[in-house]
Length: 315
Image (cartoon, rainbow, N blue to C red; front, side):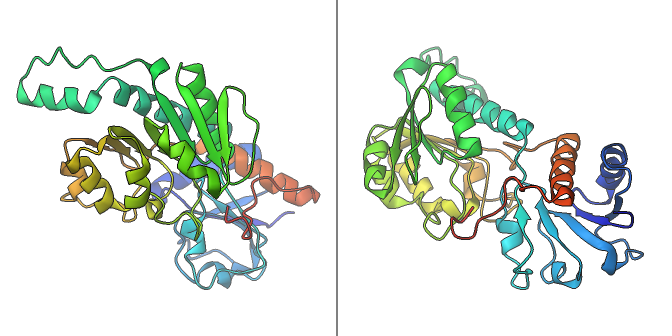
């Protein structure tokens, strides 16, 4: 195993020292180099931990055996038209990922319940808006689109915080405290009884654009959105129109089709939208390094790999 190289493109040069520190403790025999290091021997690169890798670059490593996403999603890797077809891609799913996403969505749902967007406007305008008392979590139905590793964790946390929780998945699931709907035929039903819609779907051909005019029209008037899935899911103009018309009450949006979101983007300026910079489930380098070490260790032992991207399922 000596000589195996892990090449990293995540966090830039400033983060490389921290990555190397963690891997020196977790896997002392593994050589760790930055993406742009000119002294890397391409023949020794066996593992690549990446976020938004340069197109065509991964195909240059003849002994590459694993591509590890530095994020929960893999669309930033799949965008490479020259991606090696025979190299497994592993998603980044850690205990910390689940905790951070659960924290974020619960915060966002409680902010919506307690009318935080309107309170912020009142503060800006100098109004003492003591009529903005909001509602109760127990009277609020939150519907999760997507019940994978993250969606299930979020749904469980929302239930623990007093919300009524629905979940929608491609196939039936059992989840304590969650009313689960499954399949395309039941999507209309879950939308019809939703106060807050949370999107945590993967990016697949079937889910792109799912948050658009058709689905927004199926929500009860005054529903809100928490968008933490993928940027390709959301029709931004449809959301703006739904908010302006009063059909939707508010939105918290953390992921976008173009990132960073331009400073003059309409979502930034909209009074009913809270924009966050794709930080809902940002995980520490330490937690990600532990996950990578576990996966690389499993690969070296010939054991099954966790969280491998399945092209047939789309995640």
